[in-house]
Amino acid sequence: MTTSHESVAPVLRLAVASRLLVVTLIVLWRLLFDPYDTSASLNPPCLGERSQPSDSIRWPKTSAAIESSVVWDGVFFVRIAECGYEYEQTYAFLPLLPISMVLLSKSVFAPLVPMIGYRAVLALSGYVLNNVAFVLAAVFLYRLSILILKDSGAALRACILFCFNPASIFYSSVYSESLYALSSLGGLFYLFSGSNTVAMLLLALSGAARSNGAINAGYFCFLAMLQVCDAIIQKKRHKLAVQVVAAGIGRSLFIFSPFILFQAYGYWIICQCSSSNELRPWCKGRVPLLYGFLQSHYWGVGFLRYFQMKQLPNFLLASPVLSLAVCSVVWYTSSLFKVFQFSREGKTFASMMHPVGDNQSSDSPSQLNYSMSSETVEGDHRVRRRKKESLDKGSESIQDPYPRPEASHNFLQGYHSIMVLPFILHLGFMTFTAFFVMHVQVATRFLSASPPIYWFASYVLDSPGSISRRICYFIWFYFIGYILLGSLLFSNFYPFT
Image (cartoon, rainbow, N blue to C red; front, side):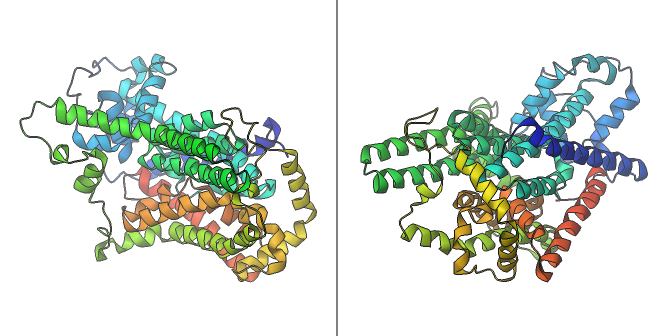
């Protein structure tokens, strides 16, 4: 198995085709229906000195069409890119997307400013940036799936599902989902390939794109835990364990740093440099966390605060993705006792993660290397030779969630691999947060960059049996229906997640 340019070509074609489809639907629905709210095109001048001069625009109709296409949170991102963080509530939107839009508009698209105006160029930059980022994210998901599952067929099916996922409209709009998916999936690929430095940088960028990117530090914590167990139990090297813990803490803090620095920036601007005589309530807190205050004060986010009868339609809207997430976690968890059985037979978690050796990492002598090795290639050939047997076992797993003892040799590969465990833990935490804490309808896009959802669905689609077929129908109906519904409602400023 390889990850050459030829092997990712189908994924590139699928990703590009999916973005062309979504953009076409957006344009079509905008032409056929009048938007519910037409205020998106309003462009009041910036409050500070950063306002752009009102030069004459050569193509005013094109400019108006682009500006009016920016709806919902996209209006905030464009405004921040144009004017900076003017109001307290705008600090809920992290800076990676606005900064990227500014850089692109002042370089590649700078010649278009006299034609359509600076604000329209910013919006156009956001559209181009996010669609390109999505295509690259799909490639990284494919490479990550091969690395973890060691099954090229399942990896390709997972990427097809990702390319046409229910939150597709957000990946082609001026939203932060595409940049988050690219940085997080790319970071995870490099992390499990053994490139810690690149992984740290990309995962830190995910924390600058979305607040939940900071919890990607948990992957470093998980791998550090495995290395500590390996150092203490297998190698009896306690000094090495201490070094691993210190390295894990340092890398985790680095991933948290963009989010923390942005909170510190907000504290400095609002609490220290404000001309107002009265401090905002959160400025007086023992830990003055701006983001938590904004979510609670302006959007009513909090534990069980969304559990109201009037929010029942939003729970129904989010129920498909929550059901898929829960099923993927439960199906994996039901087979987890087999992994513990392997552990009792003398294999530690670290040894089941295929470490190459302590002295072969390019970043640190204490780092376990998870790069693609000859064993991985041989494992893929074994998977192909046992394709029929794997399909039969997959059918049994769907209909009977408790796998049979004789199937235990399959639990180091595919969706049952121990390497899937950190992804499941991450998905479980995200699902709990989406259901109990957040505005539940946001779960559709909040969970859309989580690989286990697509890995689980990929194996379900490849499993025979009547129950599997019914689940397959549900998955395809859900994915296709939400693409059509989302592109119609969202692009015309109607509520959709």
